Length: 280
Image 1: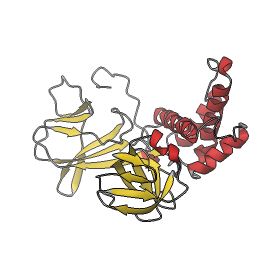
Image 2: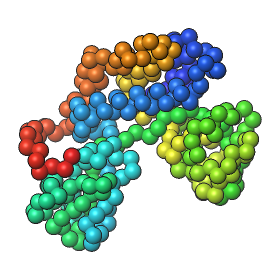
Image 3: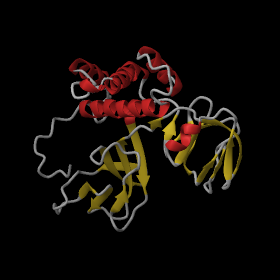
């Protein structure tokens, strides 16, 4: 998908909001991120095992039987599979309810709870949440690890109103560093005690703990993402219509669902109709 700056420019032109004082970039970016989340909601509902959003995490055996779920899991119930590892082989676990005495796993308070399996490492496959999409707020001119970074002239001074954390991306928009806390914003020199490892002069700053410069949704979703943000802008500018706006039509939802429904290699399992034993 194109860099966020290009989407912002298109949205401004198509909604007649070229004056940046009327609506800030940060607000448009928030609409784009809401849209990205809603599109993922639609995709998850259509096919929670969509391969394009698959993430795998490995865990070393913990005698407590409790494992913290990945921070970028889409939702607590977004686990696809849990395997216990025996040598070079992996074996699937069953999902159980918290009150069941049988062996298996369930989720609770953002943790994976495993019963009945001892001395086995785990591999978890889940539906991942995409990083926040953001624009380039400034280019790195210099940096001192654990001390500060300095942005080149021309950086957007509104950056400090968006977040206390930054991510750093390369010229292609790919993330090279994340979760960097900015202690103070002083003009173009930002103080931080966090490591700048992985960053280089000429990289760009995006705001947020886990941000990239372009949405990681497939290119096919760009039209729907723009449509959503465009409608949010229209609603913002027409307060009388604020309670009437439907951001995705039924047709658009069906189209998005159709792009990802049952796109995995394996046949879908029969639907589960008894949810009493599942901790959703």
